[in-house]
Length: 149
Image (cartoon, rainbow, N blue to C red; front, side, top):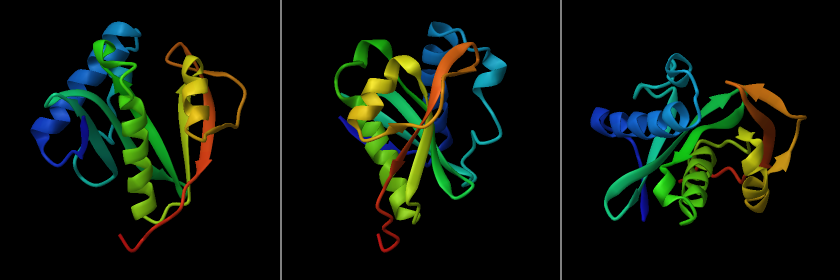
């Protein structure tokens, strides 16, 4: 397994297909809510793909929001869950934040994944709230900025 920062439109399309399968088809998120103005290669956020046997099977993105790195759209195709790929995606996004000099990251995690994020050092920072009909919580983590990379 490996993770790659998305740099080409074809890779971004692969990430969109993974997100559509997980969030829209599996979880029922409305298609019009899944994609937004940050789904480009223009530098507003960075997208990653994680591969298993050279096949793209997971994705995530990070963007800076009010001085924090916000991890978003993290998902893995169902047959590839429980292989440790979520951890790979999270670490890749945290590394991007670190290289950008960001010292704190946050995410809106689905409540069923709270334990997963806690194992990676995240702390719950809100009560449960709804996003697209799915219960979420705000989670935060300090990261070590490394602007010299």
